[in-house]
Image (tube, rainbow over all chains, first blue to last red; front, side):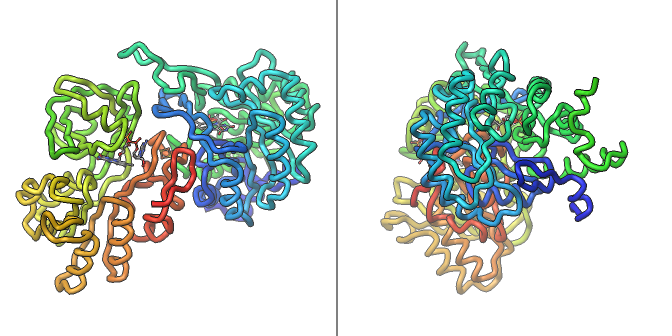
Amino acid sequence: MINRKYNGFLDVEILNLKFPNPLILAAGILGLTAPLLKRVVYSGAGGVVTKSIGLKSREGYPNPTIVDLGYGLVNSMGLPNPGLKMFIEELEELKGLKVPLILSIYAFSEEELMTMGKIISKLKAVSAVELNVSCPHVGGISEIGKSPELVKSYVKTLKDNLSNKPIIVKLTPNVSDITSIAMAAVNGGADALTAINTVKSMVIDIETGKPLLAGVFGGLSGPAIKPIALRCVYEITETLDVPVFGCGGVETARDVIEFIMAGAVAVQIGSAIARRGLRVFREISIELKRFLELKGFKSLEEVRGLAHRR
Amino acid sequence: MKNVRRPVEVEAVVEENFKIKTFLFKDKLCFKARPGQFLMVWIVGVDEIPLSISRIGDLCSVTVAKVGEATEAMHRLKVGDRFYIRGPYGNGFREGGGYVAIVAGGIGLAALLPLVERLNASNCKIDVFIGFRSKSDAFWVDKLTGFINGKLTISTDDGSLGVKGLISEVFRGYVKNFKPRYDMIYTCGPPAMIRQVFQDCKKMNYKVQASLEAYMRCGIGICGSCCLGPYRVCSDGPVFSNNQLTKMSELGIYKRGPDGLKIPI
Ligand SMILES: Cc1cc2nc3c(=O)[nH]c(=O)nc-3n(C[C@H](O)[C@H](O)[C@H](O)COP(=O)(O)OP(=O)(O)OC[C@H]3O[C@@H](n4cnc5c(N)ncnc54)[C@H](O)[C@@H]3O)c2cc1C
Ligand SMILES: Cc1cc2nc3c(=O)[nH]c(=O)nc-3n(C[C@H](O)[C@H](O)[C@H](O)COP(=O)(O)O)c2cc1C
Ligand code: FES
């Protein structure tokens, strides 16, 4: 059990939102319904990000949609979601959640984004919006995240149509220079960034000689991408003074510390739930606290960005 | 590793009735499966779907009702053909002793047969209540008769076999005036049936283990497709007990489609 003191030890304030610990549920992991999101919060998450929601519903790709490689997962879910209007039902149920609720959204056009921004402005349950411009297996979305011009323009459109809610932009690692994309997002009005979404990849079934995933391409997540994600967080925070949520391969407290040392304010956790279950949040909290005590750190803030020292 | 898709070869095909076939295969991990666990079965080029393990042993099996594209493709498989599996997944049934009742609807029997076999081997007394739409939908009646030492009650919607009526109602009528109490009620079948059985059992303070269904993608508890109440059917279930069932207000009322939209049942 997490006691009071220990909670205070790990809490972080980002964008004027209070996270009781820096372990946030990543987008697209279990985030489709209110009861499941609540359960993740009861399991000890410091915040939750919903599944990425679009203006209209999407069925996603047919199965198989996931491959477990042992060192990571490749998924091509294809952004299945019930659409914003229907998802509002779930969000209504989430009012009064004890931790920040971040609504992940995507849009195929700026018109869609405009409409969504206006609707979301009215949703009390939503603490912040994470704009997904980085899903590698859905055509029309991954392209946005690779172009600094499009990223800036999309973020600005959302900013102009969203009142009173901070905007987080979730970046793709599938670019040659992530800092330029990060900069474009900030110039468009992003208040924070999440790095990274999955790494574009594929799996071949050698029995049939065909791509295994029904959607052909997928996104690699889990331990395999942690070094990539760390590098991205480090590069971004080296040049920009913007809160960055580290995401990719976090499975243990050591991983969290690495991300915070690289400059992240908090981390998001996804694939680790497949291996460690929902206990992962509480367990990492305990491990984190032990690490800080052992090393004599009084807060996570003291650890943040240590890797940038020269 | 159980998450890796592995090919298995069809060793035999049993035609159970006009729309249900059983496919037997060998697999080391399934050999160690618990009754009530399931596999993600991939029919290459078609789909990957969850199917209960309907026999556990040197030969294992899945028993498949033809309802759509993937199950139709499955039905075309012949001896020597291959399909892929990953798993076993899920918790499976908890086996207790004493006097138990099995309440099954149609293909739901597939998840329950290995359990009946185990309970029988451990000298449980077992009563079975099984409902089919009609006589032509019935299967495994002889098998069950061989396995159980208690009472076998069959019902059909049209009365063409056994008692006429829904098995949940037949069961309620029976258990209401039943003197020795059951130590456990195991159930699997259509969600509306399970809802009814659970509500009746709850009123009578009976312990229930129900195996449930939901749309599945990952099977490993991260995508959220298979949620029912606060639970993931793939990894918190598929077998749930009283406390958990109470928290699933939507059970038998609506299910979620691939897009997460609610579909009335
Ligand atoms: C844990 C579990 C165990 C099951 N065990 C058996 C079994 O032993 N024998 C058996 O015949 N059936 C079983 N089913 C149901 C079986 O998975 C569906 O009948 C099958 O997926 C239908 O696929 P289709 O393409 O033939 O039909 P479709 O036309 O695609 O669909 C028919 C219905 O099947 C369901 N379905 C389709 N795809 C999926 C999916 N990926 N996950 C879950 N449901 C789906 C949907 O409710 C749909 O309405 C089980 C389901 C679950 C969740
Ligand atoms: C099954 C699955 C579904 C995902 N869905 C989304 C999504 O809808 N939106 C999004 O921005 N990221 C999505 N992601 C990416 C994760 O949020 C995260 O960026 C990535 O998995 C890396 O973190 P991890 O290694 O902790 O999983 C998904 C990842 C997985 C494995
Ligand atoms: S099928 Fe993905 S969580 Fe159950």
